[in-house]
Image 1 (spheres, rainbow, N blue to C red):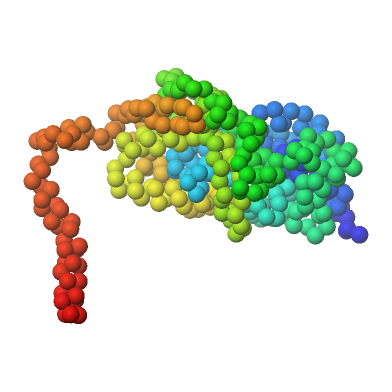
Image 2 (image 1 turned 60 degrees about the horizontal axis):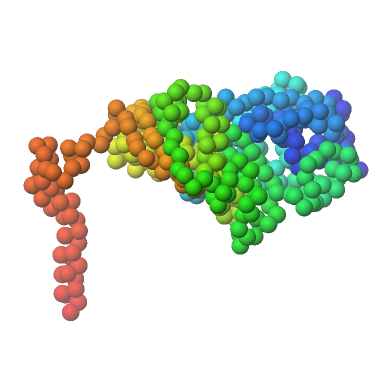
Length: 412
């Protein structure tokens, strides 16, 4: 028999209204005796939050708090990540990873404001999200108890089929069925798809899987162009007009989705040690990442660009691992901000059949000099200077060859 907590004790549950958190809400009440406060973050999920307060209260929550975090999400999380060039394992643009610390941060704020003693999440014991949530809780308020039902031995809803049965038994309103059980996470930046037939990497994603973009086969046969204007690494204009970050991403999602841009099928290495397969749609983000990278190619010097590429890899790992609230991430942001001082300009992007390619770059800070790049020799570049440069640059290789040849001679 579970030992019940005092009814005055409260837990704040990160609540999406999806299958997992829908069944976890009544389970927390039933097992722990907590008063459950559901917290939902508006991050651009479309219509997924429609009726969420009513649903949470009908499922047993004492209160449901919804916060619109889209502006903060874009300006304080997505833009720093974009400027850093963070991409996990060459494909994943970190849409779910970067959102979890933000949700957990506000969950902690709600817990403190409501006098709750615990916070809870619905992440499984196999995934990355459990780490992202719990590390953030510990970083921001170590006094809060962390409740993770999937790691509680009493939690028996360890399959989506079992969760569907539990929801029906407890009259919890859900949309999922046993035949439609993809695990999805959506926000302004992307939507992810996992589970069901995707668990076998041999299975090609079905056309009806895609939610915010068209399959490549159904994309228009005519290309389309879009212009993105950047100010110190931050996208601020769409086709020459100033626009807010939220509106910009929404517009690019619609445009990129129409052309099947931003679809990634990835078998990735989870932090917990296993490989998993996910399909991601990030149409607007893909356009912005490609445009930002193109502008950097014009405005960053070689040494800064090459070193930043190394830093970008580490930044992507920090985001993926849930270490947003750590000193190293803040320190890298400071470095990145310096690199972005001259990343101002305009990039024209061409969208066609799933491809997103630069079709023109302009910047007043451009380091590209036609007179230097031209095959014609000019006053600023004396080709005879290259002779001495190459002689000194190749000197270590020449010395090594002499030594090796001498060894070969002695061995014979």
